[in-house]
Amino acid sequence: MTWPQCVAWVQAVAPHMARSEQSLQRYVQQWDVVGKVRRAIADGSLEATLARSPYRPDLERQAGDDDGRKPAAAP
Image 1 (cartoon, helix red, strand yellow):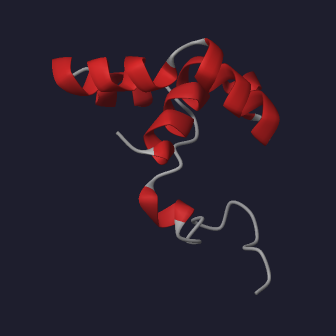
Image 2: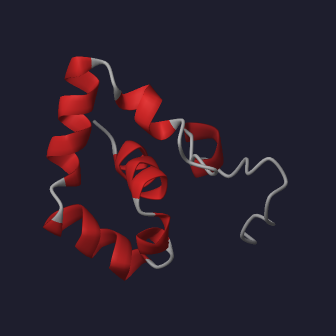
C-alpha cells in the first residue's frame, strides 16, 4: 500500500476531496482509506475501483512525468 494508491483511491471515489492536500489528508484519516486500499489489494478490487477515476496519479506522474496535463514544477 502506497501513498499514490491512497491518492488514486480518493480521486476515484471522492475527487472533490483531493483538491487540496489538507482535504486529502483529512479524508484519508477520517474514512480509513489506508484500510480500504489494503482490503482492495487483498480482494483484488483495487484496479477496478481506481479505473473509475478520470485522473490516476500513477508512479510516473508522481516522479514528474505528467503526460502533459500540467507543467512540472521548476527545479
